Image 1 (cartoon, rainbow, N blue to C red):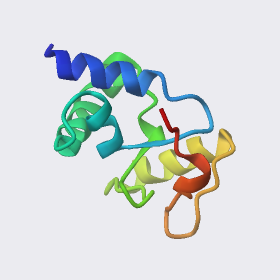
Image 2 (image 1 turned 180 degrees about the vertical axis):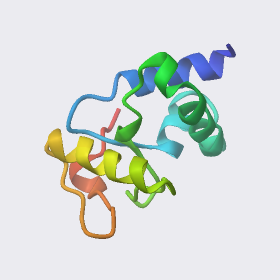
Image 3 (image 1 turned 135 degrees about the vertical axis):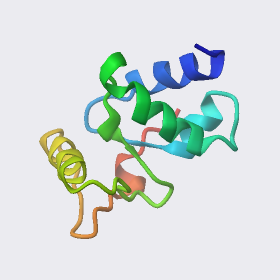
Length: 101
């Protein structure tokens, strides 16, 4: 596992309940502000194995971008259970819920 991947996993694990982070925000904190897509790949390939709270990661606009309907709805449900409001467009208010480090 690369140091970048290890750092991404560590950052995602540390997102507290009721908060979200963006792919780009995680990439920047992990050392490469241009690697938001790599963060998405890491989430896709390692969420189950590493038991990551994948549902706490949204895009730069606060939107849920998962294409699969089941996973999309699961992400919304998990966020709502933690107290994060998701609007009818699948968007989270980043001003309110984004974790700032």
